[in-house]
Image (cartoon, rainbow, N blue to C red):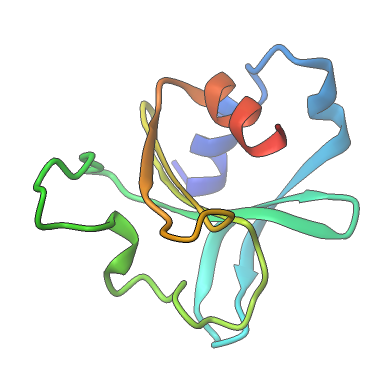
Amino acid sequence: MKPLDVFNSNWFNVSNPKIKDYRVIENLILGNGKVANVAIYCGDVCIAYGNYYDDLIYPENENSRSYFHGNHGFMGCGTSSRFWFYFNDDVVILNDHGYNYPFDELMKNYSDFFERITA
């Protein structure tokens, strides 16, 4: 299954009337030429973008500051978004750049993820 299909199969099960105001696109090309598997837009504004990983485990090692400090192409990519995320069938790990020191947040499900990025 393609990453977009995995995402959409969960995204469209979110029962919130506000979801109609958001659209999901596939393969957003970032400013540095890397690709995010999915991006979420409200109007013309990119709210969040993320990548699919089969094996997605929330980092519990206290020496690991963030899941997002790896080689994913998001850091310094030149594409604006408040949120980065990784996802699979069961889990969404979110990083909010509205904080001075962004940290990873494990979402319980896609409904929580939607509520968090649209709050």
